Length: 161
Image (cartoon, rainbow, N blue to C red; front, side, top):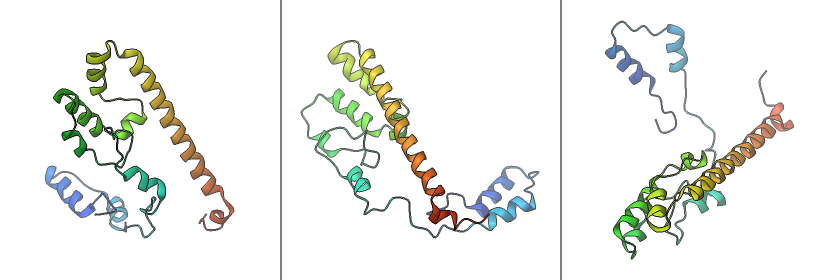
């Protein structure tokens, strides 16, 4: 279960409990039962310097831009910010990184900026735009790397056609 999120025997038993009239086709059952755990290495090695940098706790208060960092920042409890700001920053740090890459920002930004700077919409729109297109560039670069990998001569000889 560490590598494969579907435990087929358990899932099929629960589905049959849920509806006694449910019939799982023999071919589907056979295909799911023949699945094995992957034997290849994980995509990102813990020795990879970029993955390691994302996990390291930096001196800043925010961690929403570091996908692998711990969302609970212990430095916040020792800070001198007002309680509502500390709560908002903790909420920002818990915001899923993948949503930020799509341009969906935490609502706590609005709370912090509206209390301190007035209307935050211009700044938030710029930050949304920057986050979305930055995420798009990362996706596009990754897609090109994967495409080049599968088109490389060393892989073409290994593929089964």
